[in-house]
Length: 68
Image (cartoon, rainbow, N blue to C red; front, side, top):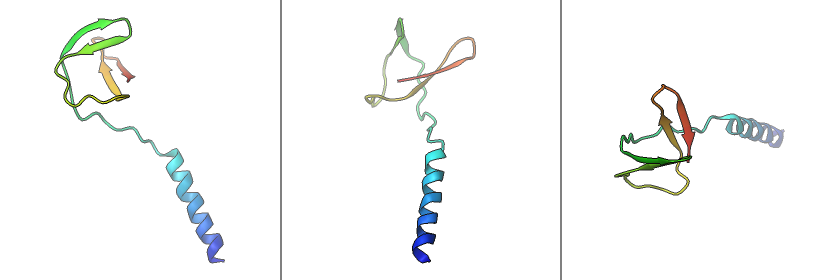
């Protein structure tokens, strides 16, 4: 009986983890756009840039775009 309860608890934990929203709010705010070339946005003075980093770009019309 205890094994079935443990399996049920594990299934509930797995379902909760699979449906959780793992988005993280950006920690840094940059206002140093050096240029735009097609879909590429170039920033100056970026601290600790990382490969595949997720970013939010706030456009002048108020819309927000998400990218890497």
